[in-house]
Length: 78
Image 1 (cartoon, rainbow, N blue to C red):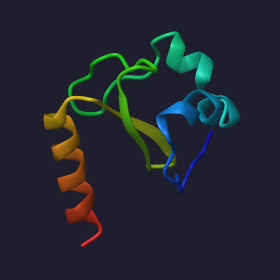
Image 2: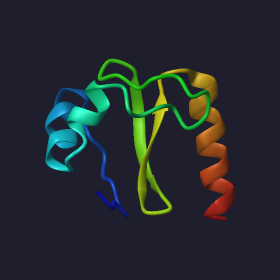
Image 3: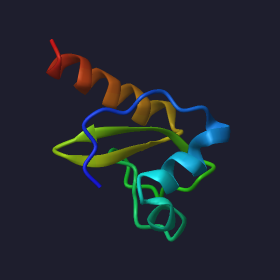
Image 4: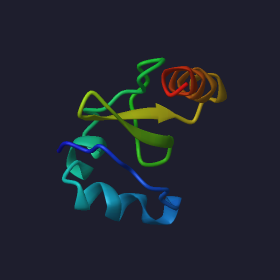
């Protein structure tokens, strides 16, 4: 699924959102990894997801990973 914009999603709605964009089964089967630390993404450790290069990327709930991604995206967007 190509995603170029993702709006805020409450954690209680995450499962439904992932199903709507067609990746819930991949998330629950361990296909996705944190784009920083490569930890397996689960429904309980998703901090956020974001579009990059026409793909969905994930960040786990480790504050260090969150900080790295936010900093990179801020630099990219100037």
